[in-house]
Length: 498
Image (cartoon, rainbow, N blue to C red; front, side, top):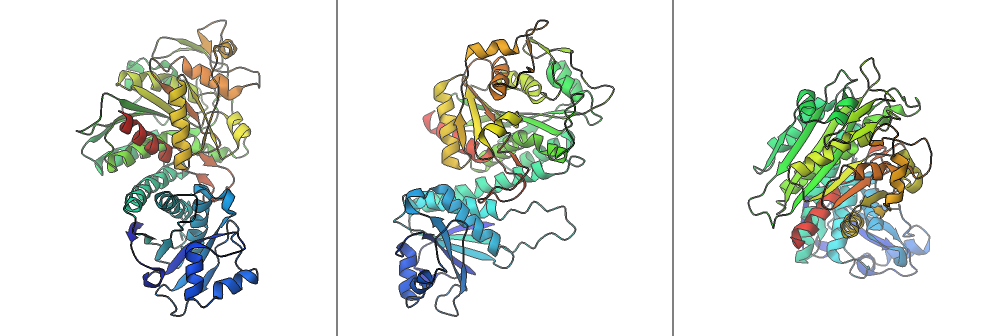
């Protein structure tokens, strides 16, 4: 979809749909009030009759019959003024995109200077909502739904709006590419298939972006005993996907390290999962998919920051070669791990991926993983949990999530939790049979492998892949692209501070 910014009045906009945000208020304000005057008080009469309410997830469309150059007018509800935020605008734009995508080729949005968001913030949210709200996960259907939406215009003469809209369009497009990865069937997106997709990202983008994807033999040669153990039960070989973005004018000596869990299908291994919704375990690679897509986005945006992305791609399969409860593994950093539960496999993959990212030069490290079902039970599908060994780094990650729409919430780490992953036989164990503090114990486990320097762990179990649709602009089942927007915002802030 093409994103553009154009100056002009509502009367001059040529588009299949002209849209404006509508507050749930007694009086019409902003561009809606101006349109009401141009249309002879029609909108005020409709509001009095209850047809225009401004409630969220409402976007009534009106045929204009020549009153304006646009063919239709949509007034998308954004709720009460005191509750208006970027998500309200994302939801309004997503609602309209969902409604109009079957017939409209172009949508133009008017901004409202009276809202508690700057024009640039409004533009960013509208682009987000349009791109993410119009996404169709059904690309494997023999007759997919028609997609006609080609262009999105933001009507503004504010210079900051143009850059915000352009950047948001790039990031949202890459978030949708991450969704494609998460939604791909596991017989198609094997670890090798994910490595191929990463190679396509590198081949089609910046000359400063490169990728390599060594296989299981090299993984073992690197001493990654934890990762290799998870991989050994599958007929589809694992891949260690490494992306490097090295712009010539990188700022400072900061290297952003991104680590991703990419279990392309998770049976649970010998500690096998229940069958209900097991088909969604194709989405257990959403963290790794987000890392791959985000590095592609940063390269396209020409972010002036060195970035290294390391993704552990494997299946967790059941078979005669699968690792077992009771096994003791040796990770890359030399620590030994007793296996209690083979379904706690993501932390084993990251136990080797994290130190490798440090070895490749990461000074600031953050991992993304659909790690614990307990995180989804705690925060639902709206927030991911963030743990860190550095409070300033955790704050920066959380703030980047909030600013981008990938919402994140800080969680604690404390050395007293460490004893719950103590093992009688090894340095630590990968799980605890207690049902208390599960996400915290997983984070404490990863802490042992995070190395020196700032590190954050993002447990995106609830936000990375939806079993049920969410009631906003992310209304589709399946992959959400969570993490791509957060990473791009984080990289911008880190580059600015470097």
